[in-house]
Image 1 (cartoon, rainbow, N blue to C red):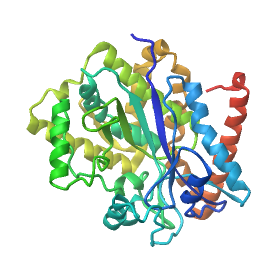
Image 2: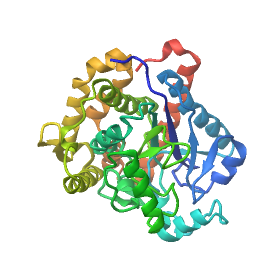
Image 3: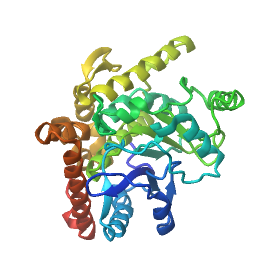
Image 4: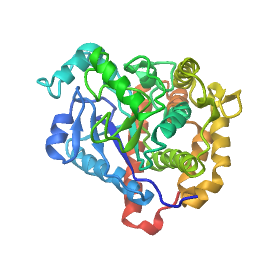
Length: 384
């Protein structure tokens, strides 16, 4: 087993607004104020990107530091960062264009409207093993429903309960509507160029799926795998736990070269497998950790939380060898207490108010970030 950790980085999309949870169009102002911040088509969500690092404590700091700077800036105007991955409170359906002159942004908002105004975590893993890059991409795709279950945080929209744990993923416009398993790099290149030719994708970035190849010159020059399915998770320790789980799976595959046998099928069968995994994602978007899904490892239906718990226990040896077992521990809390959407809904049962629930978790998000930042300043205090 290799002990060299992978380079990894995250793209973190956020909402900002009032302490009561009303999201405001602030991305232009924040981009002007802070380096390395970028804008989404509508100004109500914004993004920062962490530099790649192999070290989990460093990643912990890289995730927190931009938020702390933004929080300090927003606090001067009695504003804050808001949790969740959808616009939970009633919102204006008009657009606040961030780049009205950008044809891609014009296309996105005219085509998808407010469905794209969400927050999320995009997790990138640097992969140097070119020979096995696409085998790994296919293998990880089988588990994207599990990553969504752990992160789901979008049960409210527009002042209503959606009856989904991740309404973001249920509603987000996956594009193109069918994305096959890419068994080789040539498969990916040929398919991508065909989609562009048919105008099913506006440009090379317009591949909106749960997981995709990434690199400096897509589809040709690739150096990382990007997992895009996760909702925003407020607790940075839980973010690291999800990252660590995925890294453990990657390291296990790359070390042992034991690829899922289910991928050894003809193209027709693999296309059917795509539909199955897409359906699994939808089941988890609906019911989160309690969704009954197909466990491809055992070929039987299982509760999602049970599959995750088994995966956690089965990979303890690998996690110990990699030195990330401590970072995995918060998964136990998600399994025990549920994902963020579950926490939101439990609080709503008592408050009977989406605004009160959102205000409570907005305050908790702030308190947690500040507490973790104090830990960063005193590294001996960091415990997972």
